[in-house]
Image (cartoon, rainbow, N blue to C red; front, side, top):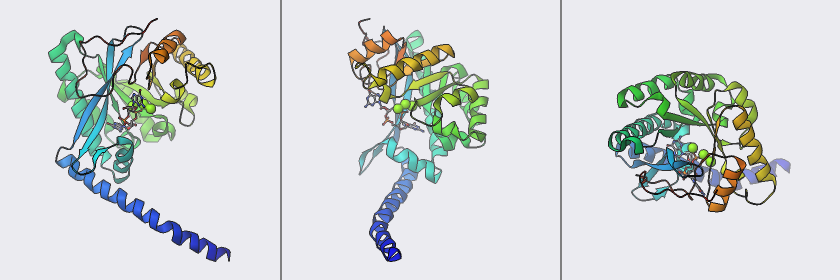
Length: 280
Ligand code: C2E
Ligand code: MG
Ligand code: MG
Ligand code: MG
């Protein structure tokens, strides 16, 4: 009876799984076309200093303008690109495009240009042999300095150690800054700080969301700024949506923040325009 029940369950669940697998295969094939026909573009979100709101860096975020589906979230297609391996080629395009754009801003805006560009790098890219060489060649090709590039990695990407951690060490050696993205949501967040060279902690939005209400989030956000300061790292508060959150983060000691309150990701942020300031 148990076997029969299992069989029934299998039959009931299989079509959905097939559907999902089929959908992912379709999406994967379309990613190839998208890369070949220029359907991807990058947008840039300001990372600002508190309390003055000056844009110190920008995070490059990929957008896919699909001819039929319209907007497809990177949260949906990046994992598919990771799985079918296209992320290696796509990631190289992202890196080249972001670094080239940073140089365009430097050349056209001078001192008003953001000091750094921050690029998300996925686990598969990081573990790919020759990744450090790729970064070095992109820097040489664009003329951007290593100190002007931040590579954002997630805790899970470096959790396993191995080639990914070696790549992070090599990049750091090259002078590229390393940011731990979505910090506090993965495994062994604090443990990683002992083994991986990190320059920037991007404190996850989930800790910022309820920061204005005294409680667990505020306690954790406070602890993270202390860890950050103690280790000589920069902390960036992610997902800041209100002036109240910005004010509270500044009060807790945060000096860098990112979120819709300061600016959404756009093709060309207004670096000269008055940035949103907070009442400190
Ligand atoms: P992430 O690297 O943590 O990027 C931050 C995400 O939060 C972005 O979503 C950004 O648009 C969003 N965000 C920023 N401020 C706010 C806010 O105040 N409120 C809310 N609700 N959201 C905010 P996005 O662009 O959809 O990207 C989602 C994730 O997809 C990224 O998370 C990153 O993991 C991945 N991703 C995006 N672009 C790339 C890329 O070029 N390469 C790789 N490997 N991954 C990317
Ligand atoms: Mg990121
Ligand atoms: Mg993030
Ligand atoms: Mg995040």
